[in-house]
Amino acid sequence: MHAATFTELTGPEGIDYQTVPDPEPGPGDAVVDFGCGPGLYAERFADRGLAVTGLDAAETAIEYARDRAIEVGLDVEYRHVDYREWSPKREYDAAILINTDFGTFDPDDRRRILERVRSALAEDGHFAFDVLPVAALAETEWTTDWELRAGDGGFWRPDPYLALSASVTYPEEAVSLDQHLVVEPNGEATMYRFWQQHYTPDSIDALLSECGFDLEGTFPDLQGGSGPSDEDLLGVVGTIAEKS
Image 1: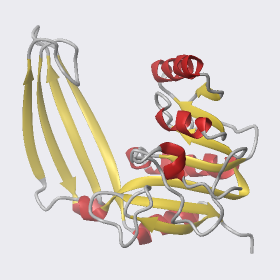
Image 2: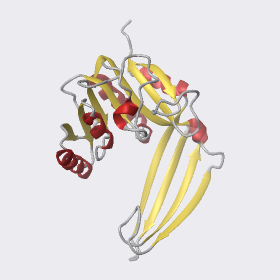
Image 3: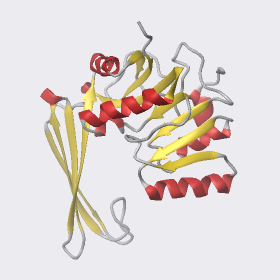
């Protein structure tokens, strides 16, 4: 593999492998993006000559990513698939799962994802992902907010709505919940709940070890930050554990 950092590959807000002591993926190497969404990172990898596979369960996102790749002339393999069930057909030099998606799954699914990643990686491949740290659990266990949008609407709807939001933390379980009740003018209401498992470096190390990985390191982010992880994000890089 070549020594190009992921900041070079993804831009100033992208992932940076310069904190990893081993060689980083470069042109010609294969990267799989778990939960690629509309292809924001996959495009940047492909633009630098990597062979990229993007996986996402959202059909709309994959359709957009495919159209966008054609529009900008990039060769990216996008697959509409639940990556918890995906069976790779090749070996990849690197895998990523970002935007703290990993912590939103239940414990069994998190282990299933790690199994999928492990089966996808070459022997010397790296897995980079991020989670929310335990330090991010607020001291206040319950906070509320609200948003009233008229005219063209906002994040939740293209039309007017009222959003009632609450954040709850469960420090003993290292879990947080963000829930949003969206009420439309006709009175129809929809509840959205987003759970997140939080980690310490030790707890993520234990999970990786259980699933056949070695922890390469934890970082304040995946943009090349140095020093101890802060309260906002925990960047994690793992490799397949060496056979004893």
